[in-house]
Length: 336
Image (tube, rainbow, N blue to C red):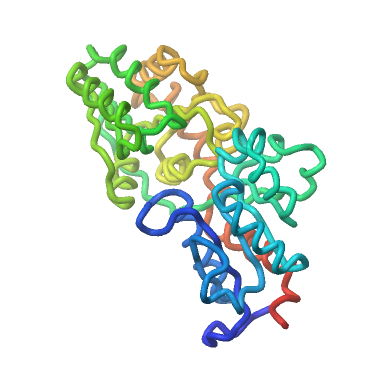
């Protein structure tokens, strides 16, 4: 079903996200990508709050974040109780807010569809709501696998410095690895928590092989991931991290905390997990990758093969088809 995207009076999908372009975070990237996927078939716009002055022609609402978009979800359900409403659940939704926050709990009960971003996401939902869940993996473009030097191993961690990302685990691992001058660790992310920023600076002063680079543009960060031998992802909670799929689709293996949000992206049998918060376990994995670097038969090569098998899940064409199918189930609203 195709709507006339050129007409300002066309029925539209409205995507609500708590973060717009100025935030340059995962919510914004998902919202913008979904708008691009939908617009040739279903005209779509992105807003921070609904309703707004342009709400008249909105027919379906896709809301990112059960708690932070809760007021928009409630307003939509009261204004249009029979129209399509899907809620896309983030890691903080799935693994924190829907357990304790009344607004988030209300959002998932009002939604007609619940979208999770990795295969273990439905397990975090109340059993009676799991039939409303569908998995839509986020996507990214494939990058050419670059040749990488064998004289050193370069690891990168990407994520703003906030409690959920567990930067302290990286700081502790960097201290364990400080005497290994053939291992370099870059850390990308703005200090959303001032104390973590101070800790990053202290780690950099004590560990010559650790560099905190602060916030970086998205494209520059992708190139840094592409050039690294490893991506480190130490988070406490995740809904389905962009940086994991960006690493996988760049041929860069991942070392990740063993949490459902990571296992749902990389698979239950992935060999690159360490227990959340276990800096020594992380450091030992880094050393194991360095020990057989270039051999083609050790841990680093095994992780690369496992990531390559997961890469097709994150293809843009797969995500586009899934997002269009989500909206198409309510296609009747585009004939109003």
